[in-house]
Amino acid sequence: MLIWIILATAFISSLALVGIFGLYFSDKFLRKIILALVGLSAGVMLGGALLHLIPEALEASESKNIFLFVLFGFIVFFLLEKILHWRHCHKGVCPIHTFGYTNIVGDGVHNFIDGLIIAASFSVDFKLGLLTTLAVALHELPQEIGDFGVLIHAGFTKRKSLLLNFLAAVTVIFGGVIGFFLLDHIDAAKIFLLPFAAGGFLYIAAADLIPEIGKETKLSKSLQAFLIFLLGIFLMYLFKYLGE
Image (cartoon, rainbow, N blue to C red; front, side):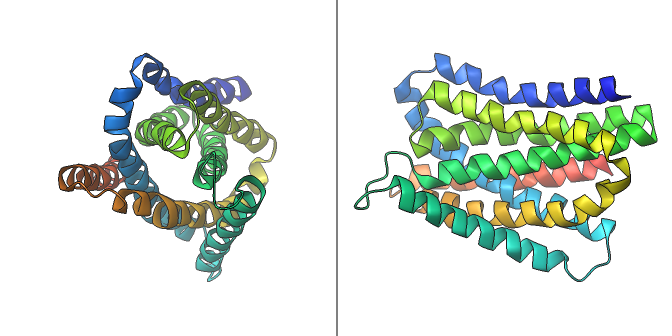
């Protein structure tokens, strides 16, 4: 079973390499679509938090602490961004926007949770493990595309954005392996990690990405980004429906 978990999670992590196509796009073309990618990432994060992570946490536990953990995640990512801003920005000048780093952390936590879920699914039934892997892949692909755009928008080069996005995706393998050896404790871990990641996603989307869309003054670009933002939410809703 461990081999199948590793193969499944390795497949999921490889989806982050979708950004490799961005290496062949000109900088001018990327600048044209970057706001749309930020909008997609914001929509996927909000939809992922409110339609997937929090409901899954509520299903796993009837504890009243779920929303306390969401709030905790929100606060932790707020503090993380402030610490990063203090360390990397001087006199208000940030070579790399801090939301790029928080996005990597949030994506890494989310992918780790996906690894735990895949491990738990394979422990129940092989077919369920494959179906879960497919469901994770479906909602992960648009997020990886959006995350690649967010990292570029934050100021990273295309190659570094691809590398960092892939490193964040590799945490799904660690989640799968750790989940295999700690199967008896997965449910307990999910009760905290799912709402914690949701809080992080809510912070990144609401405090960082949506304001970036709001900075655009051109009506056509703003409308395009907003529609892509709605598309991201709809995709998360669709994948939730397909997964039921």
